[in-house]
Length: 460
Image 1 (spheres, rainbow, N blue to C red):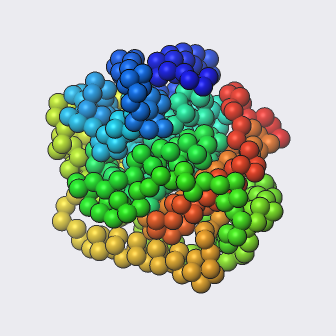
Image 2: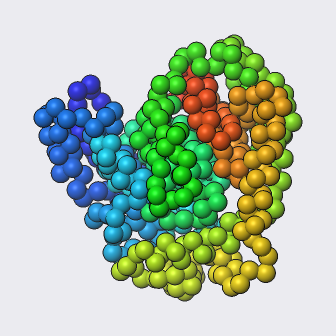
């Protein structure tokens, strides 16, 4: 967009691009709903700016929200489920409120893996009953990853410069990496979850998705704040700062970064990764080989499922005018709507598991969850502190169970046309350090590529 463009100009351009590419052309299907009031809001924001009032760097900038984030307007908030389509949410989620206060223009909502992937283990990433299948922006039959597939694809495809995703374990970082953009999983408690359709509060967090580290930092700066309704954010205000002030092209100089060969994935699957480590060294970082933090699970997914049923019921109690009032009614609804072309229902494996765990617990799940979080956090801190590290680097993702922050940055394109990424993770509240590292790498490599919307991955 040209410098000096108005919010209306930006919205008009982006809506035309969405019209040409989202349901037509490559039909990436990232957008689940457009804001019917977008142009009126754009005009209001332009009038404010014309009168000399600016709310900050996001004033008038279009943003998409994942379809699990409440907006108290005419749009639905359904987490991709037809069972949650009905009366709109009564008020904005805390994070949506913060974005509006910052002057961002909520242009619409994005598709996702239904219920942030917790409808079923046996459905493709980026599919929902409400929105259908989102496609990878680079290779249309490639993996879009989830659950924040729509937000990642929308940013990659140039539908918006910034978007909000949510993550429990990988749902921001994986689709960001697979679609060649920047994604940040904030420290658990830096960004409020109030008004977000939940999986499990022990790990859930919204986070920014953008084409550049600077844009992601701007978005995180607007999102981070203490929320009296979300006790996890009690300490957020002390860490809610302008994160762009930590961005420097020399951000890697003097940093000590640990590479744990067993952390999430081996470099054998990412041929460019070892070259990226050399780039870190060339830019002034010390890269040392360390042992992997022990993230062995006390059945993470059973713990998340235990919370899912209970916390989804609590969320549904805040909504009126929906076809369902609780997860048991959701389970019944899904048996008839939607149906596959052969007339059979789609799998709802996670929902079935969650309903089965609704009774009085026979296992101290909440105690186990707290113990697991403390143990995994302790493992990361042990590896970081004992080696004097600023961060860990890997070609994958880790740290969600600890509630620790991570950032993924484009590293290039593989021989099949799919993006590859590098990932940095640090200790609690280490967003300034991670952003400094990520920005230094990004500015030196300029590895992000615009998608070509290939129809098929080429045969090597």
